[in-house]
Length: 317
Ligand SMILES: [Zn+2]
Ligand SMILES: [Zn+2]
Image (cartoon, rainbow, N blue to C red; front, side):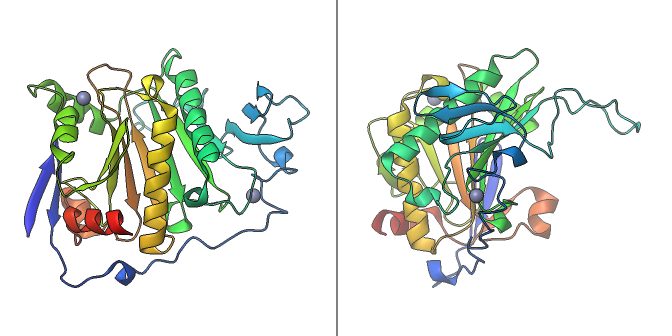
């Protein structure tokens, strides 16, 4: 058993010997709904709020009364938002602040059956460019301090609809986890992520790299087969990053996880700040283990797959 930490995160690596990737039983992601009633499918655009950005071959539009057709991605405010632009006043004294913000759903493909692990280079590049576009749109707005972009794939990972989509929540505050990370970063002699990229380039936790990015199994992996995408050159957010290189490495990790773990549910989350001291990173966590009492009590994760083994299996798959 080893204790690992990075910045303010802790995990315990307790390898269960002999456990194979196929031993991680998960329900898969194949609870496909009917495209006829799917609000994310072409033809059903009226079932969603008007899209604020519709990406088409001839540019980006916004829905009017008439919905824009022939799109390859569209983004609209969530019907059941966690945050709203004009919240009702709090009604109980425990509510300390308004949940003011924006909550968008990005449908990144018109194809009901499409699976991000099967996306081609063009789909991936479009996906990354939409993230970048929506991020820049919100982060420049008055009152927005953080833009959370995340994907839940599969019901157990939190996706309530099977049609591939990403969510974006623009917050009026920097989340505590990022504040703690920034404290650790500013008190370090140099950027911990830059050091990490340098160190992991030659380590047995490296899975894949291209010109712009490394893909690693982090030393402090909270869940089995967790991976991080980190830009090699210091960059704080999506704005200054090369979409092509990022699209390639994202495609690599999704394909490798799909093959190794037979189509696992997963979450990926983009951590970024409009603060030059921060170093963007994308964390991909298969949803194949349970967050139970110990994790909830301590915030420390027990992971049964050492990152070196995860990396080696993901390299070879
Ligand atoms: Zn659909
Ligand atoms: Zn850095």
